[in-house]
Length: 213
Image 1 (cartoon, rainbow, N blue to C red):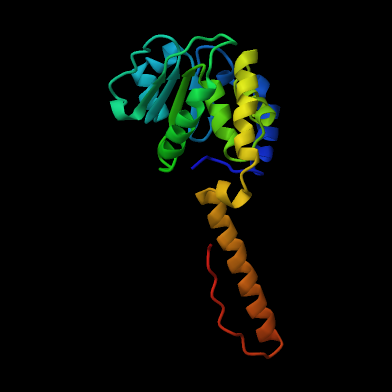
Image 2 (image 1 turned 120 degrees about the horizontal axis):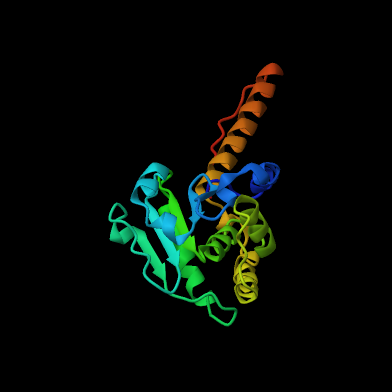
Protein backbone atom coordinates (compact mmCIF):
# COMPACT_ATOMS: atom_id res chain seq x y z
CA UNK A 1 0.00 0.00 0.00
CA UNK A 2 1.92 3.01 1.23
CA UNK A 3 5.60 3.05 0.45
CA UNK A 4 6.58 2.94 4.11
CA UNK A 5 4.70 2.04 7.29
CA UNK A 6 5.26 3.43 10.77
CA UNK A 7 7.87 3.36 12.26
CA UNK A 8 10.02 3.12 9.11
CA UNK A 9 8.84 6.55 8.00
CA UNK A 10 11.16 8.10 10.63
CA UNK A 11 14.22 6.85 8.75
CA UNK A 12 12.84 8.19 5.48
CA UNK A 13 12.10 11.52 7.14
CA UNK A 14 15.67 11.86 8.36
CA UNK A 15 17.08 11.19 4.91
CA UNK A 16 14.64 13.61 3.32
CA UNK A 17 15.60 16.39 5.73
CA UNK A 18 19.27 16.06 4.85
CA UNK A 19 18.57 16.32 1.12
CA UNK A 20 15.84 18.95 1.29
CA UNK A 21 17.93 21.96 0.29
CA UNK A 22 19.16 20.28 -2.90
CA UNK A 23 15.86 18.76 -3.96
CA UNK A 24 14.43 20.45 -7.09
CA UNK A 25 11.05 19.01 -6.17
CA UNK A 26 10.93 21.48 -3.28
CA UNK A 27 10.32 24.29 -5.77
CA UNK A 28 7.10 25.47 -7.35
CA UNK A 29 6.54 24.08 -10.83
CA UNK A 30 8.01 20.65 -10.11
CA UNK A 31 6.41 17.43 -8.93
CA UNK A 32 7.76 16.44 -5.51
CA UNK A 33 8.16 12.78 -4.60
CA UNK A 34 6.57 12.31 -1.17
CA UNK A 35 6.85 8.51 -1.07
CA UNK A 36 7.87 6.17 -3.91
CA UNK A 37 4.20 6.06 -4.92
CA UNK A 38 2.89 9.55 -4.13
CA UNK A 39 3.75 12.88 -5.77
CA UNK A 40 2.57 16.42 -5.07
CA UNK A 41 2.59 19.07 -7.77
CA UNK A 42 1.01 22.28 -8.91
CA UNK A 43 -1.83 22.82 -11.37
CA UNK A 44 0.39 23.23 -14.43
CA UNK A 45 2.45 20.09 -13.88
CA UNK A 46 -0.74 18.08 -13.53
CA UNK A 47 -1.85 19.23 -16.99
CA UNK A 48 1.42 18.21 -18.64
CA UNK A 49 0.75 14.85 -20.26
CA UNK A 50 4.41 14.19 -21.07
CA UNK A 51 5.37 14.82 -17.45
CA UNK A 52 2.64 12.54 -16.15
CA UNK A 53 3.77 9.76 -18.46
CA UNK A 54 7.42 10.30 -17.52
CA UNK A 55 6.60 10.05 -13.81
CA UNK A 56 4.44 6.98 -14.37
CA UNK A 57 1.37 8.62 -12.82
CA UNK A 58 -1.72 6.37 -12.85
CA UNK A 59 -4.09 8.26 -10.50
CA UNK A 60 -4.69 11.94 -9.79
CA UNK A 61 -6.33 13.68 -6.82
CA UNK A 62 -7.06 17.36 -7.37
CA UNK A 63 -8.21 19.66 -4.58
CA UNK A 64 -9.07 23.07 -5.98
CA UNK A 65 -12.05 25.15 -6.97
CA UNK A 66 -11.91 24.61 -10.73
CA UNK A 67 -11.48 21.65 -13.06
CA UNK A 68 -7.75 21.11 -13.74
CA UNK A 69 -8.47 19.28 -17.04
CA UNK A 70 -6.18 16.35 -16.36
CA UNK A 71 -4.86 14.78 -19.62
CA UNK A 72 -6.63 11.79 -21.13
CA UNK A 73 -3.70 9.51 -20.32
CA UNK A 74 -5.30 9.27 -16.86
CA UNK A 75 -8.58 7.29 -17.05
CA UNK A 76 -11.64 9.01 -15.62
CA UNK A 77 -12.01 6.25 -13.05
CA UNK A 78 -8.52 7.10 -11.77
CA UNK A 79 -9.30 10.75 -11.11
CA UNK A 80 -10.72 12.22 -7.92
CA UNK A 81 -11.63 15.88 -7.80
CA UNK A 82 -12.52 17.70 -4.59
CA UNK A 83 -13.90 21.15 -5.37
CA UNK A 84 -13.03 23.49 -2.49
CA UNK A 85 -11.30 26.83 -1.98
CA UNK A 86 -8.20 27.41 0.14
CA UNK A 87 -9.79 29.16 3.13
CA UNK A 88 -9.56 28.29 6.84
CA UNK A 89 -13.35 28.19 7.16
CA UNK A 90 -13.79 25.57 4.41
CA UNK A 91 -14.79 22.09 5.58
CA UNK A 92 -12.20 19.71 4.16
CA UNK A 93 -12.80 17.17 6.92
CA UNK A 94 -15.93 15.81 5.23
CA UNK A 95 -13.80 14.78 2.22
CA UNK A 96 -10.83 13.16 3.97
CA UNK A 97 -12.31 9.69 4.44
CA UNK A 98 -13.12 9.55 0.75
CA UNK A 99 -9.67 10.73 -0.34
CA UNK A 100 -7.90 8.37 2.06
CA UNK A 101 -9.88 5.44 0.68
CA UNK A 102 -9.08 6.53 -2.89
CA UNK A 103 -5.37 6.58 -2.07
CA UNK A 104 -5.54 3.30 -0.20
CA UNK A 105 -7.22 1.50 -3.09
CA UNK A 106 -4.89 3.06 -5.67
CA UNK A 107 -1.79 2.06 -3.74
CA UNK A 108 -2.87 -1.53 -3.25
CA UNK A 109 -1.20 -2.09 -6.61
CA UNK A 110 2.54 -1.42 -6.07
CA UNK A 111 3.06 -0.15 -9.63
CA UNK A 112 0.44 2.59 -9.28
CA UNK A 113 1.54 6.16 -8.63
CA UNK A 114 -0.71 8.96 -7.39
CA UNK A 115 -0.34 12.67 -8.09
CA UNK A 116 -1.87 15.18 -5.69
CA UNK A 117 -2.63 18.60 -7.12
CA UNK A 118 -2.82 21.96 -5.33
CA UNK A 119 -4.36 21.57 -1.83
CA UNK A 120 -3.87 17.82 -1.95
CA UNK A 121 -1.04 18.16 0.58
CA UNK A 122 -3.69 18.07 3.31
CA UNK A 123 -5.21 14.99 1.67
CA UNK A 124 -1.82 13.23 1.58
CA UNK A 125 -1.19 14.16 5.22
CA UNK A 126 -4.58 12.71 6.13
CA UNK A 127 -3.67 9.48 4.38
CA UNK A 128 -0.35 9.32 6.23
CA UNK A 129 -2.16 9.58 9.57
CA UNK A 130 -3.98 6.37 8.67
CA UNK A 131 -0.60 4.60 8.55
CA UNK A 132 0.46 5.56 12.07
CA UNK A 133 1.68 9.16 11.92
CA UNK A 134 0.23 11.97 13.99
CA UNK A 135 -1.05 15.05 12.17
CA UNK A 136 2.08 17.03 13.11
CA UNK A 137 4.38 14.24 12.00
CA UNK A 138 2.57 13.93 8.67
CA UNK A 139 2.78 17.66 7.92
CA UNK A 140 6.45 17.75 8.93
CA UNK A 141 7.23 14.79 6.71
CA UNK A 142 5.44 16.20 3.66
CA UNK A 143 7.11 19.60 4.16
CA UNK A 144 10.49 17.84 4.21
CA UNK A 145 9.75 16.63 0.68
CA UNK A 146 7.99 19.74 -0.64
CA UNK A 147 8.98 22.84 1.26
CA UNK A 148 6.23 25.04 -0.14
CA UNK A 149 3.55 22.92 1.55
CA UNK A 150 1.67 24.96 4.15
CA UNK A 151 -1.89 23.88 4.94
CA UNK A 152 -3.96 26.81 6.19
CA UNK A 153 -4.91 27.00 9.87
CA UNK A 154 -8.38 25.60 9.28
CA UNK A 155 -7.12 22.63 7.29
CA UNK A 156 -4.43 21.95 9.90
CA UNK A 157 -7.02 21.95 12.69
CA UNK A 158 -9.29 19.59 10.76
CA UNK A 159 -6.35 17.32 9.96
CA UNK A 160 -5.73 16.99 13.70
CA UNK A 161 -9.37 16.01 14.22
CA UNK A 162 -9.15 13.44 11.44
CA UNK A 163 -5.91 11.95 12.80
CA UNK A 164 -7.58 11.26 16.15
CA UNK A 165 -9.85 8.75 14.44
CA UNK A 166 -6.82 6.59 13.76
CA UNK A 167 -5.10 7.28 17.06
CA UNK A 168 -7.90 5.32 18.74
CA UNK A 169 -7.68 2.40 16.32
CA UNK A 170 -5.69 -0.61 17.51
CA UNK A 171 -2.44 -1.28 15.67
CA UNK A 172 -3.56 -4.65 14.21
CA UNK A 173 -6.44 -2.93 12.41
CA UNK A 174 -4.09 -0.30 10.94
CA UNK A 175 -1.53 -2.89 9.88
CA UNK A 176 -1.04 -2.86 6.10
CA UNK A 177 0.11 -5.56 3.72
CA UNK A 178 3.77 -4.58 4.02
CA UNK A 179 3.86 -4.79 7.81
CA UNK A 180 1.88 -8.04 7.82
CA UNK A 181 4.46 -9.61 5.51
CA UNK A 182 7.32 -8.35 7.67
CA UNK A 183 5.63 -9.78 10.77
CA UNK A 184 5.23 -13.15 9.06
CA UNK A 185 8.91 -13.18 8.16
CA UNK A 186 9.88 -12.37 11.75
CA UNK A 187 7.62 -15.10 13.10
CA UNK A 188 9.05 -17.55 10.58
CA UNK A 189 12.60 -16.59 11.52
CA UNK A 190 11.77 -17.15 15.19
CA UNK A 191 10.37 -20.61 14.52
CA UNK A 192 13.41 -21.53 12.42
CA UNK A 193 15.74 -20.39 15.18
CA UNK A 194 13.93 -22.48 17.80
CA UNK A 195 14.10 -25.55 15.58
CA UNK A 196 17.81 -24.97 14.97
CA UNK A 197 18.46 -24.80 18.72
CA UNK A 198 16.47 -27.98 19.35
CA UNK A 199 18.46 -29.82 16.71
CA UNK A 200 21.70 -28.56 18.23
CA UNK A 201 20.60 -30.04 21.57
CA UNK A 202 19.72 -33.35 19.94
CA UNK A 203 16.00 -32.94 20.52
CA UNK A 204 13.33 -33.74 17.95
CA UNK A 205 11.59 -30.55 16.84
CA UNK A 206 7.83 -30.58 17.09
CA UNK A 207 5.67 -29.53 14.17
CA UNK A 208 4.82 -25.84 14.41
CA UNK A 209 1.89 -24.21 12.62
CA UNK A 210 1.92 -20.44 12.29
CA UNK A 211 -1.38 -18.68 11.72
CA UNK A 212 -1.76 -15.07 10.73
CA UNK A 213 -4.79 -13.82 12.57
